[in-house]
Length: 278
Image (cartoon, rainbow, N blue to C red):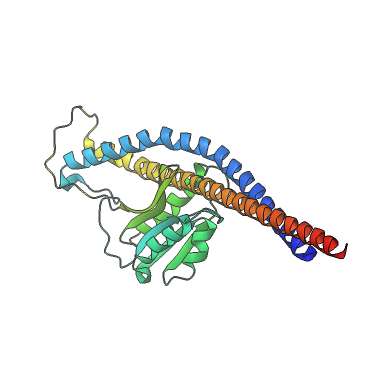
């Protein structure tokens, strides 16, 4: 019985230690997500504005003047996909859901760029070709990472090595809602819908403005995807660690109850033994 009580005490202590670790990790993610969420909210209007402006200009430019390679289609067999994931685990089902999305793509005709150690490890098991991998880190991704990615993307797409470029990342909706999305970025689709006249007069020509705008369009989409993926990671980890902490505390409470019952039973048995002897 004494041995059983010691085992219960050790298990209770282990559960309490796990709860403390989970609570510390929850607080770290909570502190990081505040800054990350602010960055997402600050960047999103700009990203949406430049995306809408690009789409509007493309819709109003005569197709004969749309000569930019980001709009032209390549005939290559392979597609290029940037996969953004955390470097570490302990973030709930975020990585699992992301990898399920990868498996929905035809892996044989893929070239992959990975941002995050988890994506890199998983992508090496696929049939596609991994051409570059980066770590996403434990802080907000710096903007200079975008230029490194663009250099690789342009080398593959502008030289006709791939037919399209997509980004697979976890989109941040709220603290409790994050979902993996696959966005096709290049080539930029020309809308076939009826166009509404633009409420602006552009100088110089729309086609010239478009040529200057498209590189920034790609930059903004890449950076927005990076910070959304990072924010999703912190939100998912915070919730996962909160659940882990609560579960560990519940186990500790349950073990405390069992320990007290066992100890009381032991004392009662000892009293009965003494009573019988007397």
